[in-house]
Image (cartoon, rainbow, N blue to C red):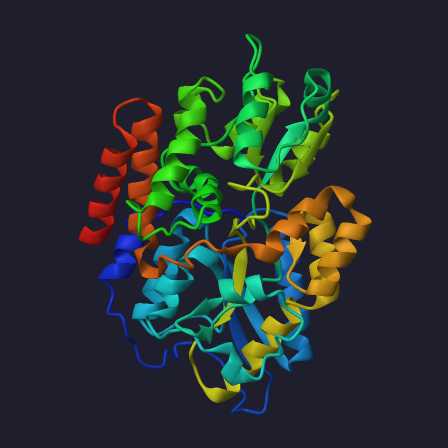
Length: 410
């Protein structure tokens, strides 16, 4: 997954686990008999060609580390439950994929090995990417490629209406108002229940200096008021409460919305839409001079706790999986951003339409950077609050007070 997905049932199971486990050494195989070390790896890339491509990269990297590797993939809907079972049984894989919002839950069990203890070179990584793999001051995961959210806009609609590309909240609202006609809305975003709806709003919360753990703060109140107010004024369809990010993209691609918040995974579909002239830019900020702060998406590769020999070999595999040339090739193929700063610049040079995404990544943060283990509660509470306000069932203060109470009650 390059985006996030809600797994509340699984996360509940996470919280039910003992928080601290000893060294987990359930991986089989070794070099005691003089043969190559036999490592294990687990991810959720069950679809082709992702599964086969990843298996080949893992095998090639294991060979470079003087080992072999047994690779398994589990559907994403079952993934966290499988990893948690393995953590509980102390059989966590040597190389394990972690969706970045789930890192705090996994790392807090003690089942992952800090990469900085394994001499992994992180000097070329974007700081925002390293922060995504960090929990409680220790680096537990490295993401070869990441993604984030930006503002997409219909170039023809803006040109026809004489609207400049918005960079601030006042400009965004004015543009959305002018671009709203009987035929289409000025703006679209996903506000469906769950992580996609919450994630789409987070740039507005963080851009205004808010925190996921202080939902009744003035900054949070202002962000929710602005965001939901665009729907209250008719510039965003109230049907957005049922829209995923794919639904918002469909509205935009069909010419039913002039602008939208979305991610680079929509680019292939947008490029395939006949007659659509689109471009993207960083998400507008409250005022000129403010810094955009969007959440990072993407998967991390981590090392499971085992023996020093296995951890060292697994760390070599993780380093290899994150090689700059692999990052750039993946980015060019999948519309992601390399974690290596030089490779990210090269991507922007080769694919100018990715330049706004690269710019946004440099100031982005991990989705759980200010909520940590509280993220599942924040996700559910904030999603409910946004839906209640957009649908007219609650005021902003009441909705956020309820959300804050829910978060504090977890």
